[in-house]
Length: 403
Image (tube, rainbow, N blue to C red; front, side, top):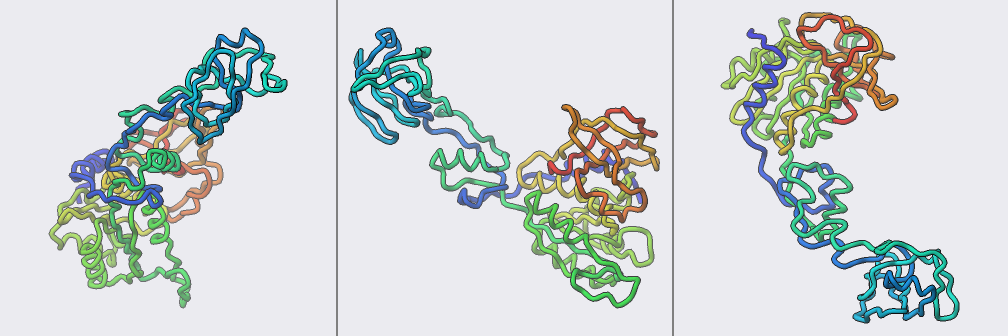
């Protein structure tokens, strides 16, 4: 087995990918969380005309010196009139209303007193006060949302303001999760002996994949039977872009996944990585599709899924593959456990303008401790060549809540 560095494995994965999936048109009602495959360009100015930013009276700026102006009428929001304001007059104008022709300033209601059909100016305002200029929001021809943007609430609002009912987005990759192991039980399945354990991998990885933008199928759990595993992988490949297996990749007598991959016509991206956790991970490509063979321990499978599968999903949906790293100050010393690149769960907080990483509430032990992912957690990235990292050092941390 040819183990490579973590950096080499990432490089190989990125180089193996050619182009994002095809795009499709969808209604903006269904676009939340999807990724744009086109740029959104404004086709008009917003506002298209000078508009009142608050309730008040539209006036000519220089008329304030007169101290008293006659009220010509009012201009409710949504109304339109070609009537032009002349000197010595004011038109009552409401938030969102078009400013009358001839006016250049809006004096707030609070700044005047009404006496009969006139306003008395108590406090003057600068020229142009509370008038939204043409194009304040955006101008015709301006790129408002770049291609590759993830659509959130603001993007949907802007699309609606542009009268865009449908947008072009990248199709979501399809992903199948296959968890293997004779010892694992599904949720709700009755335990018949103390050697059996409850499987969580398929649910954890499904949640991560959906968060990243994939459409997910969860395969039934499979015992350590070579032909059953082979059949499941083959069937999943026929209908999915990505197949993720958990378990069966180490060096045990019943670790069949690695043997199955060796007998398939695949291109190896990595056969193993100098990495903790997850050194026995295998990534292959066949017919433009990917198989990720991940460890069975919950923490290991979760970390390796984050490190490798999420970047691929992002590339497939037209996004950059980089994970959300932050710089943090290490509050307590980290003792390096191996000569590998390590990823350790840490407690990540933001204090006085700085991220702080510590190990409060994090247990030390095997790679089965999924509870270490609970709470405000990050993944501390410890380089292969690094030794112990002393408290007070600045470190790189994957911000898990930003995934």
